[in-house]
Length: 324
Image 1 (cartoon, rainbow, N blue to C red):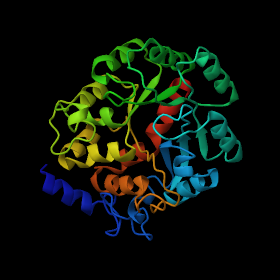
Image 2: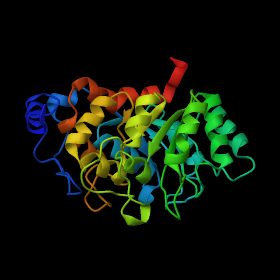
Image 3: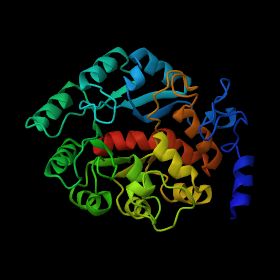
């Protein structure tokens, strides 16, 4: 099917119908924008796999308001206890928010893996109700034994772990291409959720160095990228579509992305990593990552079933693993 005919099909389908006023590509979303009625029944309430409290000083109430405005029923709320990357969020704050909103917040935990007591702390958070580790984000190579130790603990606990992959001199979990597959082969129960710049750069077989545009590559995707192969071979690997890194990768070559989604419909997770307070970009230059991604997905995803998987089902499978 040609790209033109595919787009015509999607536009004609209930899943593809969207409001023309939805904001795209960093433009300010229309304040009246909402999920189209035709696709609302596919996933009336979404699961956001990547959300923070304290993002741009957002409060717990602001975070719930953002979820309400974006049609998000539940969210994986990810602490960042080290503050590396500009967001400082304690796991205790996430647990407090969960106790206030137990039907909305799915609490994750994160603590500095360079601490000697990191494994004991994560086990304590497990007993307190946390459901996974993330966002895993320290200035360490992916090959570091302490990174492997936290992945191994998640495997033991039957947990997911969200990892921020960013190569470069001041990056996080550097060396995805060289080291991630080793963990996927060794640890089969943990669900590894890939996120951020280097993760999404590897949607293409052509990945420029991080200091030469490799964190946000532009232009057509070269088929045969690492993500296609790893997602195809390891069902416990998931892709977090959030933030500018996810949207850049998905929107840079829409024809490729349509096929990518069709090849991996069971491993793609809707997420925002959005700091705005109202789903319309307040305090974030008029941009909301959540509504921007929704508009894109509702236009490009080929079936209602796959949209449901991306919005809800895959997140719950990544969360629960073999518990069901």
